[in-house]
Image 1 (spheres, rainbow, N blue to C red):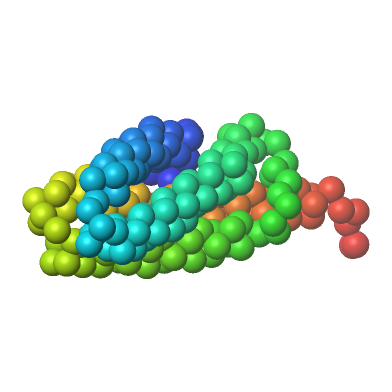
Image 2: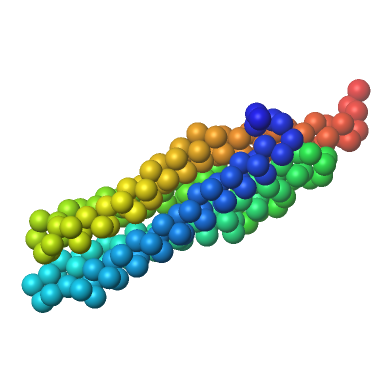
Amino acid sequence: MTPHEEGFLVGLITKIRVSHHVATRNLLEDLRRAVDRLVARANPTERATVLVLRGAFTTFQDDLLAHLLHEERVVFPYVLGLEQALESERPAPTSSFGPLDHPLAALKDEQASTRGALDRLEAAIALGRTHGGDPLVWDGLGEPLATLKRDLEVHVCLEQEVLFPAALDAEQRLAARHVREAERRAPSRT
């Protein structure tokens, strides 16, 4: 399916929401439970290290969930409205944010911020492996984090390389259609 085919954006957004957003929330929950277990088991000498871990995880989780909600509540509905307008000859949807490139730039900034939070979480886990007690306990965080990291890399690539350009193209095609319609309705000057 190509970006100009009917239903392309609906299919892509559905894939992102079902394959990535749901999986991301599930992986975050698995990781949160693992962090909570580690914090609960920490002895007094490990306490400072696990608190660093909990803080890093909380920041990462908060950044990522805010990003997902921004997509689901603001950007995805608008992009779906663009596609519906293109397919039905209706006008473009209205937005509270101006051109689509504004929220897309914000999403890219959020993705970069989330990546930084993920790096800090990985650093906290590495610190815990070396200074936080039993490395095997800390290694239990590695698998869910690695799975989440891979999913996020695919998610970001899918959005930045496919969804965002296709959505901007849809917005431009609607704007061009609006100009053509306005020109057609305008009285002739000859």
